[in-house]
Image (cartoon, rainbow, N blue to C red; front, side, top):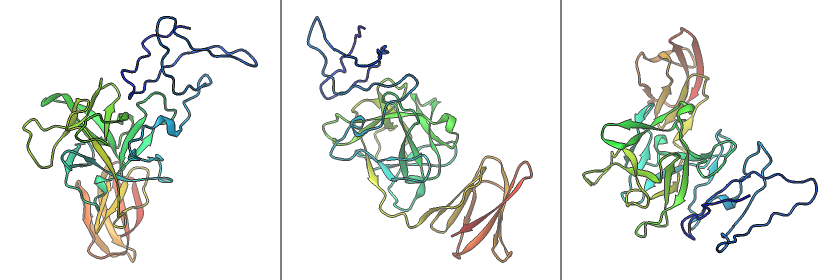
Length: 303
């Protein structure tokens, strides 16, 4: 077997190459050589059965002073939450709602919409194996916009639209150690704050720019205080979240929501989005959700 273009582009960069080989029953010898120049520096190789996937291990995660984010489960069994902050501007990523543009905001420890976990796709192969999920249950999609050919990012609960990234150490000498995120198919364009006027402050859309730009480097700050943020029992069609004294119910097919105390006393009603309630009194409530197909669901909520 002959393989070409194995140069990763530098000693500080890693590349992954795949080749199919036929093994004999019993012992086999795999020998690497280069008849024309020095052999490539091979750090690791894995034998993967046909139809299998690369094993997860610490080698596959680049490390810069221990700052690489912990990988969480897609469910809620094993989660580590982060505020994802642009190191050059201090703005953090904030989920602005279903199918809304992702923006930078000032860090607020108690906002669930600013808390993210990094998950790994099932059967990962290659480098583009990570997704960023907010505590509200949404991940990122990439859309075309008239402002820039690099597009903007939105948040969506539609898993089919979630995109994958690779996470690499930045080579920006002013801001490293830090990380950059590159969308699969972005051709070395990295997650970046869209700021053509170079203005200070927050509320910047998220787009893409060339690798190692000043607007790229990210740090993952572990969330310090989760006591004010809860996720209530979720139904198959609605997601209920509690942030401080604010109760939010989200779903694409909700017609109206009625809120009752557990003794049956009516508390409030919402017939239009957003289905959000300010709960002045803590306690136990019943959320009666009516969907557009006239199905009704009742969920117990503790605030």
